[in-house]
Amino acid sequence: MTRQFLSPFSPTLIAALSLLCGATESFAGPNGAELYQQHCSMCHGLTGAGIPGVFPPLAGSDFLVKEREQALRAPLAGLFGKIEVNGGTYEGGMPPVLLPDEQIAAVFGYICKTWGNHSPTPTREELAALRATTKFHTFEALLAAMGSTELPAAPEGWELRVATELSFSPVRLGAHPDGEHILILAENGDVWWCRHDGSELMRLFGGASYLDATLGHPSVLGLTVDRNQRLYLVSNQRNETVSPVRNEVTIFRTGSWSREHPWKAPKSWLRTAYPWGVGPYNHGVSTIAQGPDGLIYVNSGSRTDDGEAGTLPNYATTGEAPITACIWRLNPKDDRPVVEVFARGLRNNYGFTWDDDGHLLSAENGPDADAPEELNLVEQGKHYGFPYQFSDWTTKPYSHTPEVPPGLVITRPFRNLGPDGGGSARGLSTFDPHSSPAGMVWLGADWPAPFHSSFLVVRFGNLLKRGADTGFDVLQLKPNFSARTTSAKRVLAPLARPIDILKLPEQQLAIAEYCRGTTLAAGIGTPGRVLLLSPKHPMATSLNTSPK
Image 1 (cartoon, helix red, strand yellow):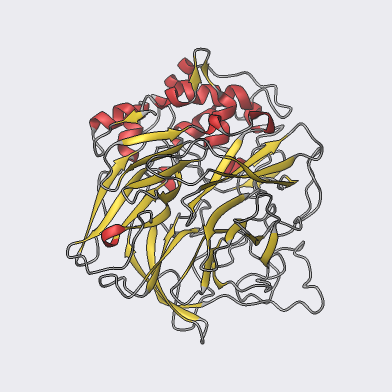
Image 2: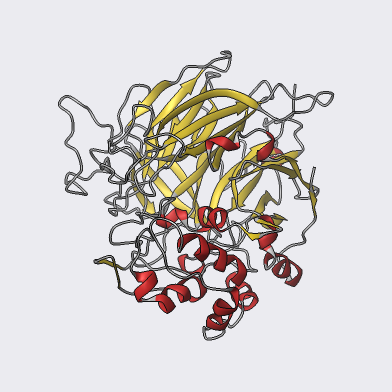
């Protein structure tokens, strides 16, 4: 296991972050393809297709040739305002990329020789000279300016602190069955753990120990532990050796944990596949959790923005697959589980959870067309609208939005009565567009005020520039199930792209920050950290995460 000791954000950490190239370099230098996938593909897509009108294509880009200096300055200083690329107009806005010059040169080296591009590759020295003409003359100066050292004020009666700094961006948290450790998942499949206070951060095992590298670049987005103390991990891999290119989905599982027999590297438990997504919209299979009924529930996100057809060669030109944009249900007793679709019409539920009465609530990410994000009560056999309808809209968001099939009944989301999250007396269904709700927890009546008997949802924050930033916070929700309404109160903000939240013993909460930027302009290039929210006076609780 790899052991890592980093103190709270400090000049020492800034220096460590400036050497992030060690995470993706070999003796031959930085790997531009891996860096692109980690830092650029979220907006420009794994195939460089971009998003029409928002994020320009990098594939066959005339901008790289005609506006070379402006293109090179974009990751160094950001790029805002209208630009013309391949005959189209784009105005999405791009923050600086928090990578050192050598890594940015490697990314350009990959882009300039891929997807039909044949433009010259910039050197590290050329980029350093350009950076010297920007507001922040060095990478270290940019990093120091973008990294926040402050934490928001905690609610009355609570304390918020940094538990541990990370050298990567976390995508999921989990509770280790020993009742003493937090599990932290990196997108490359590495599983880390630390004590609840953040000490003794170590890597349990690397993604390379269980992933099949021949299936393509991994995106591991799901982690949970079941009641038999087995660890589950959910992986997506883009397989380009087949046509059409497909998403190879694997759910891995370990044996039962005990102090005498700790986990070994997980083995494949379920394997399936579907055509890789259109442009950047392959949300993949992510959230996994065991329900009150003992079955395993899994989010399978959409492969499109809104059911549109693809146009890229070697990629499927169809809309959604039968096992995408839905929630699966699996039987953990099966050695070879079969995917059962529990509910459909759910674009991407990166977070869902149950309350004490068994209600399954999910937070759904909406499309680029500025529709609100949704909070849904998910019930078996129901359809929640995607790709036919969003929120409570009665008009189509796009010309290509398909018609509602005859006889299909669509279940509407909760209306948000506020005061926060975009809510109002009229009610928004449900949250501000592009606020990106992510991890969720339910806190029962035995939790201290103000959180008792409510849901908490973290919001990753907007990736599109549509006026003021949205998200970057934690919302407290108190749903009225009969009226299908909810209140929403912001209890922590601003946070640095919070992506998951986890209940711990003694009524503590762990929050994973994906990076260090608390605004869109701050970018997503810095590694993340785990925060600990603790009550000053814990109440008696029945929560028990230790093994039987």
